[in-house]
Image (cartoon, rainbow, N blue to C red; front, side, top):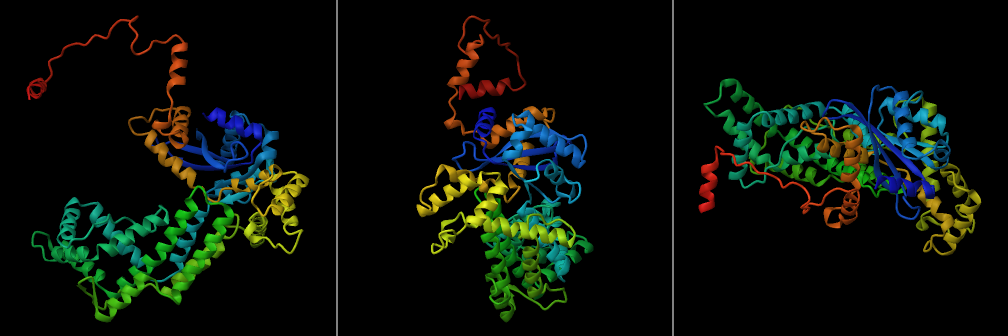
Length: 510
């Protein structure tokens, strides 16, 4: 399947983007995963698929670049062809991948000067949130309390069972409380905060019972009393509400950016919208913040009495402003890792130019009063995508004449700019699939076999659409026996007396 797919890409010379990431497999080996995003036949929408898995002997940028090139050359591409069709390289922001001076992206750019280096937007969103947390007061205290809840229930089945009983008695659907602002993406933090918000009465009831439980020692009772005091303080409730509102927006944005069909122009528009939504919290509080304000007026929330505590409170205006500012700084550029001011300015300029060039391909943005609208942007985009300017210009003119309804063949390669991937989420999904394939019981799988299984698991059709007949014919054509063949020795079954034989005989007679 992979050979046929790559053959189509090479024949049609479809534009490709390389997505790469590094992680450690279950077998504790450094593994590089390589994806390609391309329009397979030049007509269909670009699709990202796993190209290969490579075990790394070194974590140097030169070695990783060599392995990426080896994957491409091994699968039928040539250096000359790659100079024509390779338009982008997307990865996370690790310095070994996108370092300014000697990262993998820089080394690839030396060989292929026209490619666009792209820092995964989902990783950048996480960096923006982390930086906002660092500059906002009260966030460390909030995170420490959430981590203490995670430790309390993840490390003690007894505590988890008692909390479940409290939730059952209060008719509350209990959710698992996880870590916040850890190595996982922002949706994980949202689930943890939402779990605490929904399970608030059950948590308060469990803390109260734990502080009065004589079977626990004085240290444990004091711990539960402190947790109850913290949970029922109005300052914590306000901080929890703020986090729930902001993380809801960030979670929605993160999931949109992870969507395989999200293109760069769409990502740009969505990010602009969500930055404005987060900034609006200073004037128009979110639903959780409104509920917390109403609870403060009566000093009661979900049946639990609130008290004025001395715990730190997160400054709502400061936090939302910090999140919005960091999103503007990190998302609206090609790469967001540390660099000199001049380099950072060039990246932002390149980003704005690319977005403006791609915007003219959308009929909704056309200026119909200007017959030469978009000509300059199309020429610039042709340089980026290595497309013939004259053909693309003629195709674009016909495209505008049809009102965007008909796409001329000369225009199709220009529209393949959507092959640029805004996110590296496919690599993360690939690692999740890889860890389901290479388990502790199958840790001896070779990288080649694991890569083949990864390809089948990722892009293979479901069983109900699979036709096994051609493969059966190939099997039999090589002289192998069918399942009903009588020309071989019949299988012999040895009758063994098992420890459970009496039970089997009993079930037969039932």
